[in-house]
Image (cartoon, rainbow, N blue to C red; front, side, top):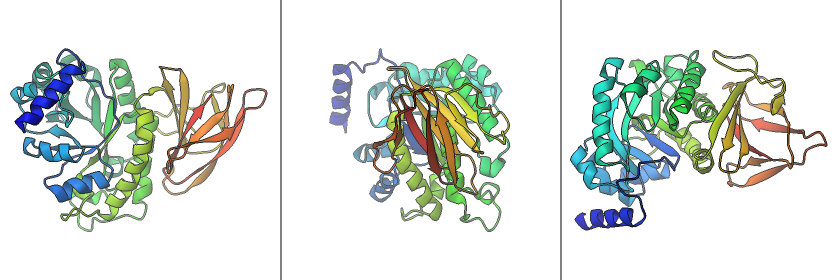
Length: 368
């Protein structure tokens, strides 16, 4: 183990990933509350599509062997100093859901980790109604993470929180990640009898994830992995849904991680905090219950549109007109990872297309 740590340090220094360089999020996170404790559970995490987890230092080598990046619950700043550049570490857990009066102290502990190891961030997650501006005044956070479990706590504020945290992350110029409940049955949250698997579970989880992606999310964290896996490492019924959604995230993640959220629009009926499509914007549609995220690659100024069916009780064929095109548009096939041509625009730069969207599902378009 010592030889491996030394090798990691040499590699980090040799590639410029040294203590003088700060962490940047360059991989979409697919994580969860919990982590593997043996070979069986480690394989289960990988097979379910996770690339990150939360666990103890004693399980770091297990995570490394299976290509998982760990947020370590019990690391110290001294440990962090010795593990600069360690590719098996995602970050160091500091606190979950601190209250505003705890921000300063949490920020001090986070800063100690990041001073000891600038190549990994300290990890803090916020409860959704915390004051974001006050948080960044006290905490030198390198990303913004929050939880709002709409199927457990109520759907009314889902988009309100997405809009607020999207803006908070943009203002602070940091990546945004969020937590999603790993089973939509709210009886799990409140400890009520009869909790199980709902018929619309997959649609609800998918809607939570794809609407979050439309708002510029750079990571999805599932709460908890105890709802994803049975004790023997096999998938629960809801875990099978999580696995399918993670497969889509594996296709989308390498693209989304490099994009900046430019705007988010919704079609009628508008939810709280929903912004309507601009009259002269790049998209026109009369289809209801859509969330449309506009995402930009600042490296080449290319534009992407993530079109999501907000409804969880029905699929729909969305009729969408794209405007201002010069070359055309493509749709990402989430099964193959290939871009499918949607055709060339008319002389006025418009292109009409129909998108078949399952309940809660989304399609990523690249417009040119």
